[in-house]
Image (tube, rainbow, N blue to C red; front, side, top):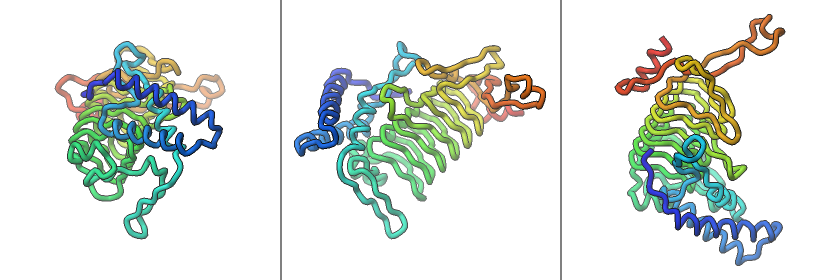
Amino acid sequence: MTVIPEDTSASTALQARVEAVSADWAAAAGSPDDELVASAQALVSEILDLMELGRVRAAWPDATAPGGWRAEPWVKAAILLAFRMPGLTELRDGPILAARDRTALGAIDLLDGAGSRAATAAGAPWRIVPGGTSVRRGAYLAPGVAVIPPAFVNAGAWVGEGTMIDSHVLVGSCAQVGRDVHLSAAVQVGGVLEPPGARPVVVEDGAFVGGGGGLYEGVVVGRGAVIGAGVILTGQGRLVDLVEERELRGTPESPLVVPPGAVVVPGTRPAASDWARDRGIAVSVPVIVKYRDAGTSARVALEGALR
């Protein structure tokens, strides 16, 4: 996944500020004074700006962390702080298209980048097809991202270069999506804000997720993996690998990782009890049926596996 290099010294300083303001806010027990509110608003705005530039992220690639990704709890704490800021903003385009959201978390102007330092600096280099897409403040869209409406990208999400977000797709809060990924129609990439230490969903470079698929609870989809239509993957779920004859499972400490290049389709397994087996009851389980060859496109690999 192509990334903007992490500035660890700046992150450490920002983390200390977020933790201090969050502690002061908690101590105020719902009655913060004007000085604390102003300080928190300035800090939240600064961090959301940096997130839109891709310089602050809810998770970073880290080979030493479980699944190769390290969560940044303080970033999610900053987004949660944004929800506590007073005031609501109305967004309106005529009598039908209207919204009301927290002032700190309005939508990015997808044409001229108003309200988004990232878009202003880069010239809003995205292709956003007409029809009702919304990208919330604090999300990062790299150059070349294309979005087919309607779609929604939530605060804290990170989307890499050349990725396609198809219609009716949700990219949830803090989800990390790599470059040249294809999220097909109606894909749900789950978000996570609480607990702050939980790892967000990760879709690495070159992955393909088929229509109606669901990725939740911090699952990692490895580089170049192909997820068939309708497959649901969760961080604490299981994945049966027919090629390597193994079963992969996720835990709260080490969520499920789909191996790079794996081609995953819906499958079933017999239910555990004798009563269920006697009645032919089965439960769903995702299955790896093959691995992509280096020169095989995601769509060709998937179609071949299904045939």
